[in-house]
Length: 477
Ligand code: SIN
Image 1 (tube, rainbow, N blue to C red):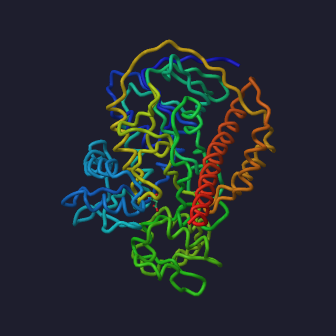
Image 2 (image 1 turned 45 degrees about the vertical axis):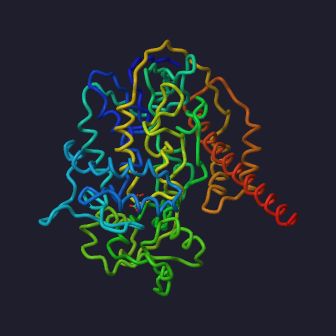
């Protein structure tokens, strides 16, 4: 196997909005390497439909902060929320300077509304293809000093004297070692670990594994958001909440409104809608009869329904894994607490989402905190050391079987028995020093699953101890 060595000032792992924002805001004198596990467009940012929430045209960001906190059930960190929404007032004009053309008509911006937002404040591009258009425009603006490498799988971070100084991985099947003054994790969430997801399948929690091995703290890992409306077909796609913002209603087989008991109806916070739909017996549909100009406003959905031969007036939906609120704990600058290592976007736990993210706050978070990471990256060249990386020795069939098991317990109602046996069995797996790209990829996915399973088990143990303590307290009184 041949070996490629690279030296850069900043290595950014992940080419979605978080990574690209950092790259766009670093000085052009830096050598920057931006790596993507598949082709650059294989990111959740490219798939984003709804848009970007901003109080750009409101008198202040107060209402946006309020909606963000209420959607999080007051569990988001208030000071970080203020940073998100206040810095986020600039996102529309700032992205426009980079060539993003938000949708407008003769009366100004076409601003949408989504679940748990008190008002219309979602800016979009190309209707429900915001992510694709934003990412195309921004990637075109990446300067010469940013080298983009596709099909690079990073399987380990290297450290010297407590500082992260680079990474090891594969480009194609060739081993690659990268020495970097700073490393930014922008690897996205965990959705690709399971089949019922709105996420890009390449997004499988790699950043959690890399950060944890480097000594960074992971937090709130059990906070996982399920989106209520994935298209209920073999390979699910997201059906954007903006469709409900435009008047679509969730109905059952008989046309009765499924969310009729909630004051916000079909536009209730998405965790509540997903929970109701999960408990609901029988199919659920989006009745779009009140949505005007659906083909023009939701071109991606329209095309998908045509391809799947689905009647766009009555779209079958079901919940699926959508977003990871927890992740690598970072401060307000995106620093992980491990020297030289930053995290941004869905992989990071910035504290802005608490236990339930407000719709269209994720692209906003990538932009606001991506700029902050860029501002705080301080370079310090250090000697390069290569840490030995090992991988699970695992056939394709065995890996697929573990992946299916992971999908069985990583659901809206986690299955603790299955999770325990997954942990016990993967614990026994043999490891090899002869790491190939395939083994590295399988290992990262199973390690991400193990990190999540351990977090759920800790939560369950804590819950049991609490119940025991409360019962003992009641008895002694
Ligand atoms: C959606 O368009 O429904 C998803 C947007 C988001 O996740 O914020």
